[in-house]
Length: 135
Image (cartoon, rainbow, N blue to C red):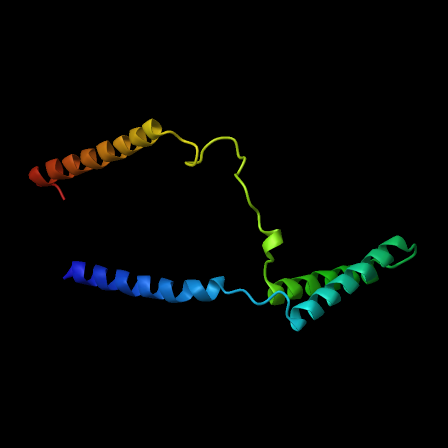
């Protein structure tokens, strides 16, 4: 009975994932008029903020308000326009160690062997415990 519940749950989870992923990947048209308006507003807010930073005697409150406006308009432009293709990161990740893209097959086979031995050892330990009457 438990396996039927597990299989049903997996089927529902898979269906939910299948239906939600295309909606999450759908991006609005970055050339739309609304997107252009949002980008212009963000650019204008940034210019205003830069001008205020160059001026002397501007109150900190006014400067903070201008910075907040820049952040709000930039966030709105990002929400409306989505990510453009030019802004996406490409290429390999240079993190030093790790990663599976450049590992050789011997290393991969060794890792799989370690996992198999661990699973087999766990199964043997569980069988011994059950045979001894421990639960």
